[in-house]
Length: 447
Image (cartoon, rainbow, N blue to C red; front, side):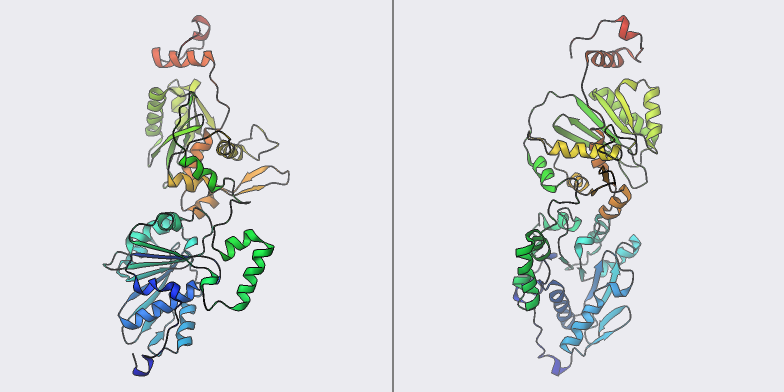
């Protein structure tokens, strides 16, 4: 760089010192509005790129045009400091002395192979990381793999289950540095912003927590199931139950979806069994084995799309007394309260998790994401309506298959009569059930 430029002072707040001094694979800064994260990241990267040759990629989930990127911010900071060694091009910024390059990419619209081409990056800056989908992040994280490379993350947390936060921020490992920065940590925070923050604190405390302190949206009006309910159920200790087993089977509709079996006994969700790329016969074989091995009270299964074929095979094999097909879009048992069966079953999960008695869920991050991802609304008649699975999949990066499998276990009340016990004994003992057997043989008394 030119001699006269060496004395230029870059004012990076001390709270961000780890960006330049700490050797960590991941550096994640989060917090509320006016914390100065974007400015500090931009200034730090511009400073580092003047000291050595770096390939820096600036990433966000959606970048329809270069205007959506942080390129304009970097340009403004270059002009602010009067750096003469940077040259700004239409789609990149270069340092003419060190050879450093800044590139700008959107993740969602990139072909996975193009994302993988970023493996030579020295630093990846993920801006507005709360918007990054799990699918994008799962591809990106192992892609930035150059020796000594770093991932810098700036985010204002939106939801409890933001994919980047769940993956890195919630339980950071030894290679991950996490720091919260708010407006009161920023010595350059404008007076007007401080006054606005303090006013919000008085007039709208909940908004203050989210907007200015960086807390995820409270558990909350738009969400059907509050994260705290799921975490509570996942942290409970195991207890005994005599309730009968119910299985829910959500069948994959598209190539990247999963077919999921959920095993629930009363207040205990025991486990999930997950399968990919299974055809109709293969899934029917798995379901048959579970029915024979576990002898559930009932298996509720999704019979939309591919599910109908699995259902027909199971019926043909004589499992009719134990299976019940469910259409998510069908009429609810209580149509005055729910728009469709899907809303009714998912509200069953909410009631289950809201019980005064303890309930138990597996400690499964994907299940947590599924259950806390569903937004609710109401139709003109005041009936519960859930957002579409397409909307959830777009935001979550996948279909909420585990959540749907659990919801299916609430498709109908479960109880076991002596006749039903006898039917199971006959079915698994002597072969296919004959209707006449109910009248020709004594009722089975034991279990």
